Image (cartoon, rainbow, N blue to C red; front, top):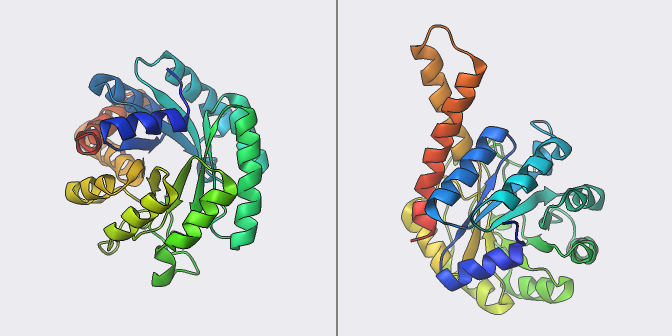
Length: 280
Ligand SMILES: [Zn+2]
């Protein structure tokens, strides 16, 4: 069934577990995410990032996401990830997405607050939830550094986070406490006390971005300290690609539909692994 982010995070809170928020820019990853959630009777978030428009446009993959979420036997939230404009977020909401993330983390604090408030006002008209972000996270899915990449920017100020939440009325907060988007070039240094401090001050479920690639212990400790939504993309997509490379190498005549299936199965297996960790 299709639910909002707020509802799904309440379930996570009750079960004291983390919910996987899987980016599903392709039909294969979408089916893999829903299948693994149903098999495990685990709630799941499926999300489409604005930066993935080059893979599939939200108008194409969005209706499939919403339809599969509605038909699923478990609670599913369809979420717009890293929306950078109100127009894009509105597009998602009109397609039936039940949650949006407005990413104003690269703006000044004041501008971020102003735009996040607009996103909240819009989403609430649709009965949807909002994730806001404070504290810039470096890197993208390919592990490239942002131009303004520096160590300082990896950690969110807890007092400012508290103020941000009060001013914007968001439902979940993405904060920076040491993870980096994309492939890890060096092992991230997570600040668990900071997670705890922000969670206690804001009284909101926290979101981990750049989480694929952490160890099971790192995930579990983060969840224990207040992380409820864990964004997951890079390492799942890599698992799909690796499986297709092997398949092509080992088979002479290959059809795309077969490659598609191999990738889907490999991603499902990869997602199973994270669900086992998050819902411990
Ligand atoms: Zn992210």
